[in-house]
Length: 313
Image (tube, rainbow, N blue to C red; front, side):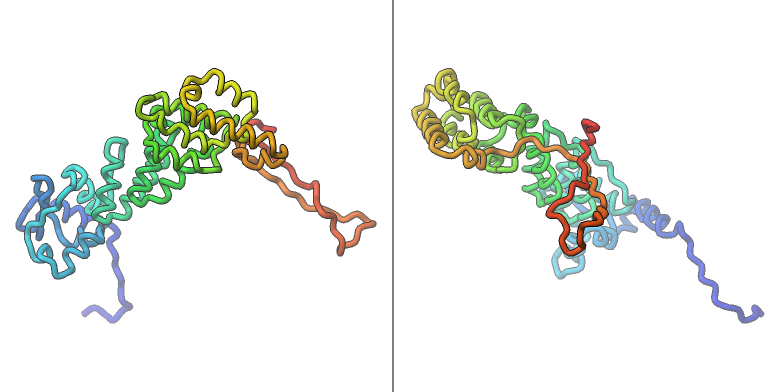
């Protein structure tokens, strides 16, 4: 007989992973799976419990009183079978490969089928891949599929790098509606205020016949009142798009007149933000002089400094 001793609790650390790997192997045997997903003509034997644990969509489907809850074969429509296979493999292994070719499809499908972890890691991937050539498309895609972190970061990138973004092919391919949304943002940072006008003219010239009708509306969005008068005069005398449009000439004349009758400080209130730079701000303590009293500290302190990490100044 074994003498009475304290309980001994044993835990096999590899057991959860072994079970998942075993279930993945059992998928190849239809007798040991309890549902088959039909996606685009492809069949994927699966286990309801595994899918339900990874996806709120499948959890609701298999736990409810739907026909799919009892059917051995379930068709999933409007889903790419390659993407579906990636999601199923993730449910069993916790692994997924994300690249430029599949990231948008993964986000769309994981949003449709409620795989929140896939959405999150794909959003992180998009943010890491963002640059001037793709931030506009990423912004629109994020808004369309409810990826608020993606769209927010794309907006921030656009605000900080508008001049660079406006030189890309993606900018020239914008719809008028999206361009209006971007130009209406007063937080766009530019090195020179003429940059917005030049971007608008470039966009119109890209498809002149279809877009020239929108030029008056767009010019009203680019803060003409803050531009130097000489620049506006040059536009009137040398820019064909302006010379061919009575509406555009009237808009420029109106803004010139407004600027002439407005104090300089008020003119600058409508100017766009200039290019901002990140700096480190160092704030130090302060010792009172002997002739100062605690109750009356100075209105401001000089005990702080700015350091630009780019210029090292």
